[in-house]
Amino acid sequence: MTDSEDSYNESAIIQRVLKGERDEFRHLIDRHKNMVFAMLMRQVGNHSVAEDLAQETFCRAYQHLKKFRFESSFSTWLTRIALNQAGTYFSSRKFKESKRTESFDVQTHDMGSSDIQHSQERKEIFAALRSALGELSPKLREVLVLCAFEGKSYEEAAEVLTVPVGTVRSRLNAARLEVKKLIPRSIFEA
Image (cartoon, rainbow, N blue to C red; front, side):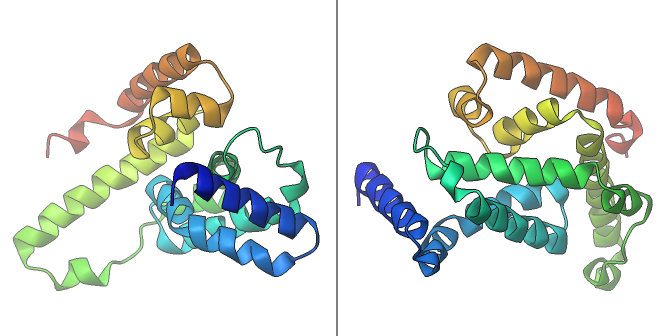
């Protein structure tokens, strides 16, 4: 199936949903659920939270589907909704409380001592990175997630964020500098 056929099929599905065939939305969920979950998982680092945010992303998409203008791909529009959900999570009390507590990881507990140390160091790095992401302004966090974690080009990120490519570049640079300030150097020197 070519991109234009895929896009046409997606547009046809959206049109059917808008005409009242609500069950057709399942096709859109099936097509995009892995991408949405993976993006959210890389941001929040917690499987259960990423699942909740992905579900909320699709609920929002369904509720606001009539606002979809077919000017960009459905994937781009959905990515924007998912980024908004992540932003809401990072500003929530739930996130702020989770930053203060670390959960016990059974897999780490069962490893050998050198594996435990390596795993613990990785956990500390990822926890510091997630914490730093939560401290960034939404504009910086969004561009960092799209370009650094999702691997989107500057042009793709600009389309999702509806900003010029130059703005993506400057925000990405600012985000990298801010993360560098927020993550303690000692984490990487262990």
